[in-house]
Length: 320
Ligand SMILES: Nc1nc2c(ncn2[C@@H]2O[C@H](COP(=O)(O)OP(=O)(O)OP(=O)(O)O)[C@@H](O)[C@H]2O)c(=O)[nH]1
Image 1: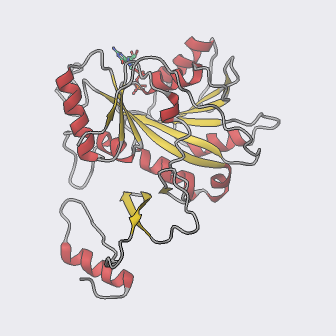
Image 2: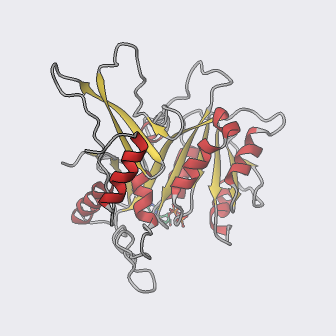
């Protein structure tokens, strides 16, 4: 069943800055990912220029040799120039920094700027070929950083026209179907798999049939993800910021639910994709219902005997 949310143009509905938050509260981070040319920078620019009152810092995570494209967006929109690794202040108080590799260093330099004002929000824009998993993981493997920032969510921008194939000046390359060496998963799939929300962009260029097909492709990878249709990445910012999706601590996604006393009788569902996991409270156990733990593992070329043996060793009881 499709669960879709249509979105018009405009960025109305931007989330207001958290009120009364302590100066020491962790700064939320949203990772903006998506395949080459999907509309990531357009989304980041929309967020930076929307009337939300946030003081936002953006880290453009550039792994390639050429950092010209993203920094030119800083220059053209604000008339500023930036060197790699240098923070540039925009006219509305937001900051921008392009880094080739070590975004953690950029994050630390941002948090430790002497006399620097505190930021309400941090965006990390990945390159189109990035796997967002290690970036998210790095945020919770750095114990020092973890206390000062918190991963709020992962937004994947998807090009509704080219999600299946790119025909730019060469052989037609299928973004999702592109074959990789044995065991490797392509980045377009990983970006969708890690996402809390998919911004399905370029609706002006895609037929309704292509959009519906794209939505089905997305759901096949990440069935529970929120999909928002956009043109020019114009999305209600309330949907992408402050999702509070990782409230359960290391790597956990809580779906915004907090554990409360008195709810211990509910079943918990843990859904994990690579390093990230989501914990969602299910319904209460019914009277007399057998309380069992089930583990469902989905993957390719799984060796059942090895998985069972590994599980049995882990729990120290025979697997059933
Ligand atoms: N027609 C159309 N063009 C769009 C839309 N969204 C973005 N674009 C254009 O698509 C191009 C790529 O957009 P970007 O926002 O730079 O995409 P990106 O994902 O940051 O690209 P890379 O950083 O190169 O991977 C730009 O020329 C945008 O103006 C849209 O909804 N419709």
